[in-house]
Amino acid sequence: MSRSDSEAYLNELVAVKLFKDNDRYRDDVYVAVNGHNCVIRRGEWVMIKRKFALVLDQSEIQDMKTAAMLEAEQARFRAAEAAHN
Image (cartoon, rainbow, N blue to C red):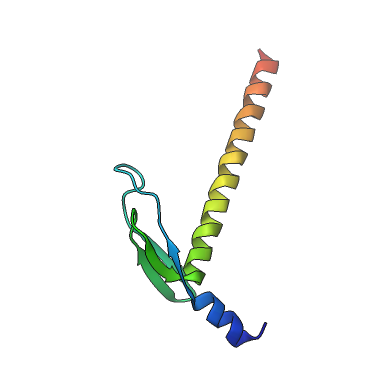
């Protein structure tokens, strides 16, 4: 894929809808990629460039990995604590 093809792909508009509640997930989301940015409204379908949607996807994947790691570490701590008691 050529550079211009890659740029065209990353700049294509895609539809996203971010979860919204009245607590932790109520504020709009700011996303930046290489000096370009956008603010994404929560709770409604919006069209954004694919490069921003990919950043959101990567962030969600990282959040899931972090949660799994924390769960594993808590289980390891509980097992070590039980072994010492």
